[in-house]
Image (cartoon, rainbow, N blue to C red):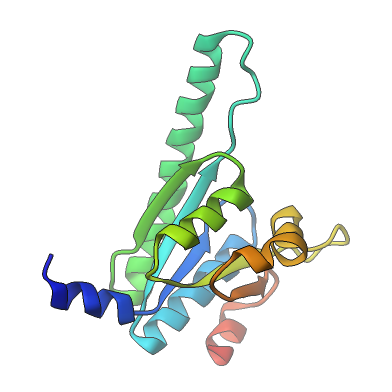
Length: 163
């Protein structure tokens, strides 16, 4: 890759959207796509696979990790299709394994093209979710980018109007 192309990529805003099985993913992904579209940026998708808790038999643990990876890839592919339809650009992909919060912090530190971390918030009585609670209360000082928290109950029309 040329130096000119690298400089262009550094200037491009990248919105890192965390992909998971939650219903609020839809709102976070829509927000990320709309912002990227409006500023000429791009979307990055991150999925963090939790370490296998069942380590008693090595083969079972490996099978569980393989299934988790397959699930992650399927979710990422679905999210990527949505990003392509919305922005016309292929998103960046990150699949990591470990503690979700720590892996996101590491990713933001490693990839200087990431401009914003986008998280979808649950809207139920139990609060926004453990990842958001941790990132805001304990890890905000470890991140080198702003965090945008998108309420999971926002309609597509509302998201479009505010982006």
